[in-house]
Image (tube, rainbow, N blue to C red):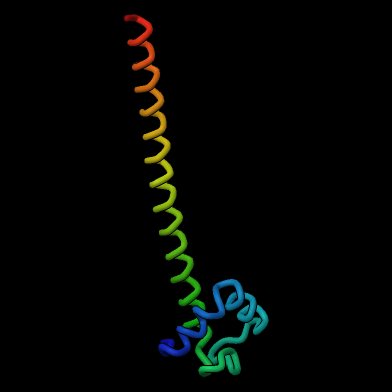
Length: 92
């Protein structure tokens, strides 16, 4: 399990840098010596952190897509109401 200072250091490095650093260690299992300044974490803990970040990003993308759909439907409804309003004015 990652310590709080290790987790903070991973956050500071960012997902892409952590992933690249992990790849540079090859297929090393167990403890990743000199991986972080705050200590040597287990590889599985770093991989779990990366998976957690991936799930967080996927959730953000789903939320963004949901709001984009809502905005799209609002634009369609607004356009239809405008067309109907103009049609009613022409008929008068």
